[in-house]
Amino acid sequence: MKRGGYLWHLALSMGTRLAMIGLRLLRNVLLARLLGPADRGLFALLSTLPELIAALTSGGLNTAVGYEAARQRPMGLLLTQVLVYGCLLASLLTLAGLALMNTLGSQWELSLQLGDLAWLLLLAVPITVLKSGLLTLHNADGRVEAFNALRLLESLVPLLLFVGLWWIWRDQPLSAALVSWLGGTLLVVVVGWCWLRRFHDLGLRWQAGEQGKLLRYSAQSHPGCCRNN
Image (cartoon, rainbow, N blue to C red; front, side, top):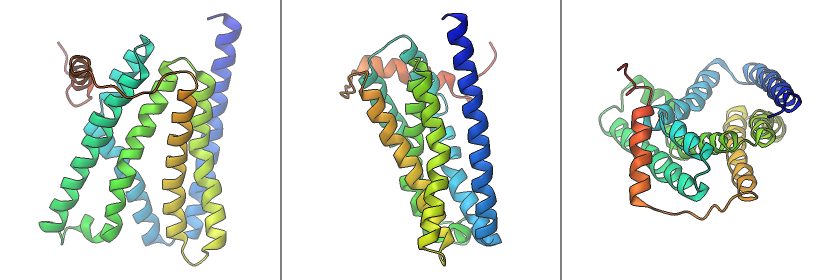
């Protein structure tokens, strides 16, 4: 890459990062003012759990698909890996955790705090995993502008949605916060998928040998499995 192009991409990434920080700070200020203390804590817990679950269940997945995307492997193959070993596995483990919490942990503090809203995790976890995978694929594909645009969208859309929904549901700020969070994440997934499809064939494909190699590399790359030789 030429020096001018590198500096442009560096400036673009830094500018995007600063804009993201500003937008998220503004959204957090609005949430702090409009949500009560209890709702603030509940929303923070719900919005953090999908990231934690995604990291635990597919921590090495993004490393594996990013590495293979940089080697220009078929995107359909890599997306199949994200959907099966990322979204599906995370969803099944989330469902198992919720079932366990309902049967054995109905009096747990976490269960009492989340209540029925815990079932939102069945939607939030897979789209969080897919969003993360799509961002990784865009970045590994060398499309810096698309990657930064998606990151900016990830910060801007929930803010705009929250303001708009709160204007309609002034007596239900928690509902506005939850819908804006999930809606923003889902929009990033849709835009990221469509954008990637402009440059690649995204026809899903299953190749047992290749999927097995990717799965083994994902396991070796998982932060919890990494060890010094």
